Length: 73
Image 1 (cartoon, one colour):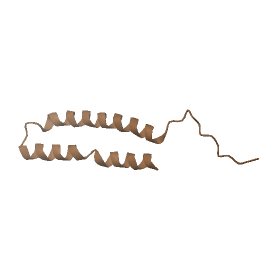
Image 2 (image 1 turned 45 degrees about the horizontal axis):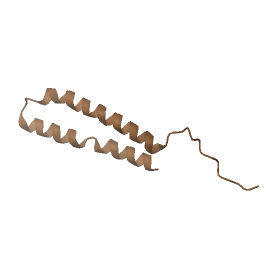
Image 3 (image 1 turned 30 degrees about the horizontal axis):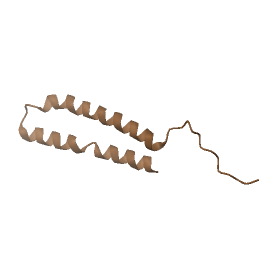
Image 4 (image 1 turned 180 degrees about the horizontal axis):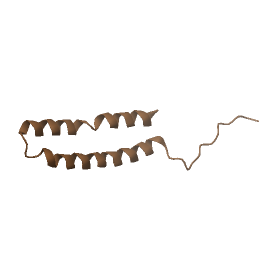
């Protein structure tokens, strides 16, 4: 009898699909948090606003990178 690889469980969600769902939900939560914190930053000195929005604009990259690397494995 030939050894065939086991059939994958078709009900299981693929890692890339799971990563997509987690990424979208996480990004929406991140944006909501940035907007809520921005209310406290707006109206302060322009350099503080600049630093806040610059950091908030790129801070999502590291978690997204980790999620993409995990999904690709």
